[in-house]
Length: 404
Ligand code: PLP
Image (cartoon, rainbow, N blue to C red; front, side, top):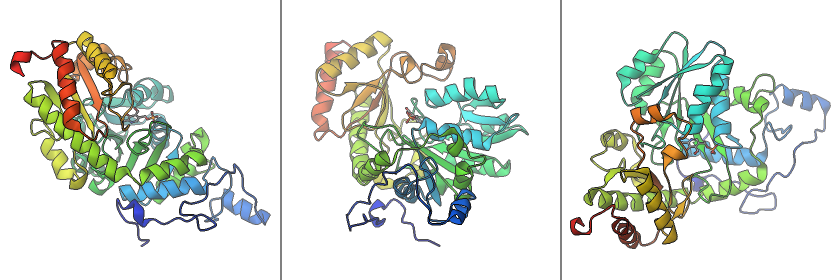
């Protein structure tokens, strides 16, 4: 077996053609062949190591894909132009007309909209369920179900999927378990717990500098080959390919992910504990009060912590908006969607990243108006940040000074 170190990106060595410590960037959309026969064989998928056309694969994309596969412990990976550009081909590859998906009901709004509104055009239907209840998940499986879909830690409610439990169900009913691990890179390794396919939006923690969109699909060589097939591969034919220049820059950022995740987790744990002590309704998987705290703990790679995402509920949308505006004014972070930046980002998901979900369904799943989602940054002095956030809440009468 080829040696692939898990989570040790440093152990992967790719040199540039002149001995550069970074691999050279493949700045070409097409590749020449010395013989026409090799070109034909490459089309047929039988000429390992040859490149054909950059929508299919490029050396730079393969370097990044291999590093991410090593991180997730899968055989290989395919990088894509965005997280949605990873999610949609996976679903389209695994499901045809008449097929069915069982999905967590708390997932990123774009994924929800794709499954709810777009996939039915191809006669692919989805049942949205409470993914934390394995009996409910099992009851939703029909003879047409092909895919179990969830996020390890869900956007925005931070529900935690019992990946090993879901993997058992997937095995029992011969389904593919697809897990979006965007919120918990390094902390959780879904493939090791039995997931068949692991997806990330690289746009978030993995790239970490909010300067690009990108995605990855990690899985078996067979599945990735299927996705890349020139005849019926959803990645090849739908065309959401990452550009080589981007792949090279994401690879460089990936090398510091382990340090960044530790700091995101450290800062988020500090704030979550302090917010909870102040009596704020706080959701963070690292808090013992989180309903799936023990499951997260049982799945996690300890040293990376519980991740950088937390939510608080300040009671109303007006209060949430006022707090976010004030925190931004005082330079505590940015009122922005997305996550994984060095700076704290906050948004009210009900009116932003989850606005695709109808209001009644938001209420049913516990997505309240006053909810603020935080992606906690890399602040060097998190106690100072906390004190300044607390002052914002006192100034807006979200907290009563005498209770603090
Ligand atoms: N998955 C999750 C959990 C997300 O939060 C997002 C984006 O917010 C996506 C997927 C989609 O990723 P992208 O915006 O890179 O297409």
